[in-house]
Length: 232
View 1 (cartoon, rainbow, N blue to C red):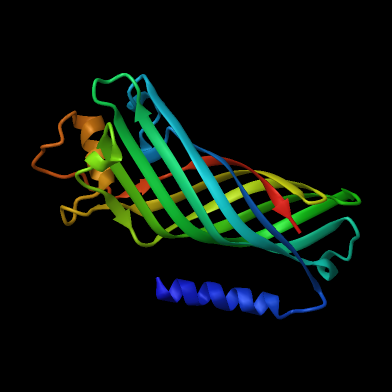
View 2 (spheres, rainbow, N blue to C red; view 1 turned 45 degrees about the horizontal axis):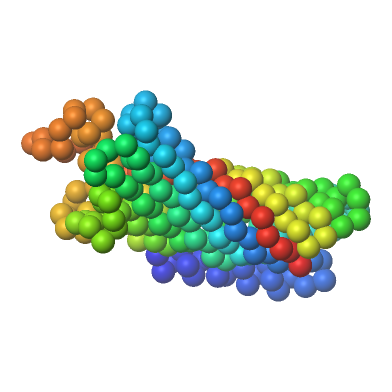
């Protein structure tokens, strides 16, 4: 993780030092994060019928724009950096006698290329693709109340990607983004037991007390984010 953080910092310093060829768009935003039914490779049919899902997202970052590359007044290439994001997703079984919950928390940083098009003054549309470095991912399954959680699953470093679209007008920025990481969520109580293995047991066998654990350890955690915020 230290090597990734060092590389991320060096890239930012390199682009920030370019100077006159670069204009910055700083933003912060938040909004709704909709977790996909394909969490843990389950698919919609793998969840109980009355499962609900919700979430939230916050992030702040910069779009570094290099105007001389395309030499155009309307189009510009850039580097889009999210210095820090926080993402929360929740699955909840609303109909069981003891409500089952699964809360997933993630914080990290993202970096990647962007393309911006400005059809008129004060308006711009950004398209981007970014590598996602999740510095911490934690999943907590529990019944009724999170204080009743017996165990949690975590991964200190997970890698993923995101792609999305921004609409900017004056100080307003609105965005839609698809984001996913692959995390090895290991149990805090049981060494070498992973949440993906537990999920596979429930889905494929219907019994979590099997002698042989499934092989897959990484969990895919895709979500769709809708955000609004301010840019300067």
